[in-house]
Length: 236
Ligand code: CDP
Image 1 (cartoon, helix red, strand yellow):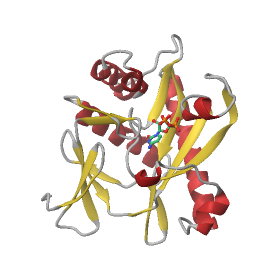
Image 2 (cartoon, rainbow, N blue to C red):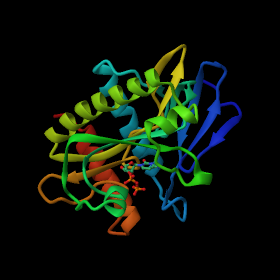
Image 3 (cartoon, helix red, strand yellow):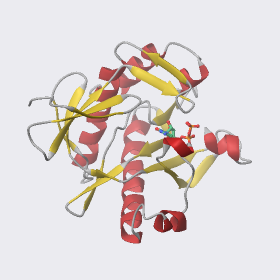
Image 4 (cartoon, rainbow, N blue to C red):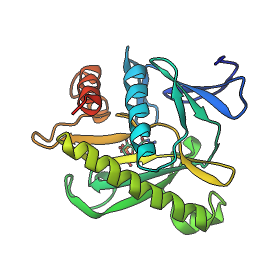
């Protein structure tokens, strides 16, 4: 598969065209950012760790009948993905209160949220990813009612599958973010599912095993990502 011109470069991934217009090459870079891009670093191996975990999670979802953009992984940091029409929404599922929920609402960190809470942000850096509601999503024509229903349904299915999988490995799935895209009227999970896009807490110690280690400067990010990747991917 030939890597052709760069189509898009985000904060941590670059997307290239390939010879097949239906497929893109997604390269996970070693860049990491937080706080709306105000904190930035490049950490060796981070791209390959997130590419590995994302590919692994997409595989689990596919096994459970959930459609994802993954076609195949081609090297340590790159995968081939379906070329989707991306929907500019960040669909966040929360099982335990943390992050912006705790910052913006009177709820204590660690409070279980049952049933899980879905929060949808507008993927729009110039407006700092503001939170949406269903009416705004329709008014701004970001998705139709059917598409929104389908994205919420898939997000909760993904939550069930990942929560169960991680739970068996002693990890609490606190929250995570999904992005979706469309192709031929079908909605697929796109983007990535990695330590950068989820909060994971060790069930025993409560220790963060995700990007919060970087956000808070609590420890060595790559050592943490490495350990959690092994815990996630290693055979049972
Ligand atoms: O983490 P932050 O305070 O920026 O936002 P949040 O609303 O608490 O994030 C909820 C979950 O979505 C966390 O697991 C974030 O890592 C993830 N997220 C993301 O991957 N990308 C964003 N642009 C926003 C949140």
